[in-house]
Amino acid sequence: MANDVTKDPSPKSDIVEDIYLWRRKKLAFSILSVSTSTWILLNFYGFTTITIISWIGIAVVSMVFLWGSLLRLLSKVEPELSGLEVSEEFVVETVRSCRMLMEEMVRWMFRVGAESEWFVFARTDLGLWVLSRIGNLVDFHTCLFIGLVMGLTVPKLWDKYGDQIQKQLGSLKDKSKGAYNTTHEKILLMKNKLQRGTEEKVKKSE
Image (cartoon, rainbow, N blue to C red; front, side, top):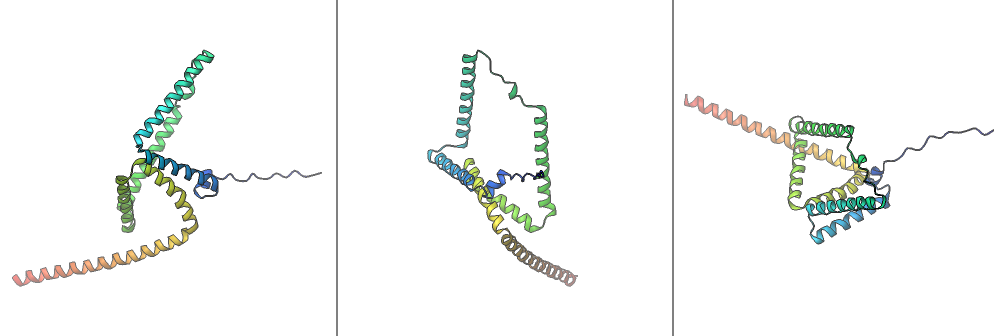
């Protein structure tokens, strides 16, 4: 009599993580190719973000209008719209998620500004400044395209070279700390010398 052997199902992999880490190379390459082609076409024809949103809205409204008209003509029944209602649970969960995100952003800003080391503060300010310059130079859909490309390349590079990058960042952080401490000591020495010189001048004048 054969024994029944129950095997645990293999854990399901996250499709988003598989795409970012290029485990599903065909799907990741397809997304990158379609996004690149779309971005090139949009820039070639000069479409702006408002134009894209408007055309998408026109397409959605037109499709819904045709669907409702065909449904009334063929079945003589009004379209059923009860399934399009937004549930109260969904609204409450969305509001809670937005509140948690805003609170986390506020806590992060205060941590960076008041509690973090100067290296973290300088790095954050530099990143935000670079982001503002990019926003002045490119439009919204180009920013989305850049974000998608970075999302498809940075995680893979980090997964492959993360240890080396962390070592280099640690070394850079140590050197920056040393330079900051040296500069701070020199400033304190100059400040002490100026104070001593001022005190000596006051004593001589007396």
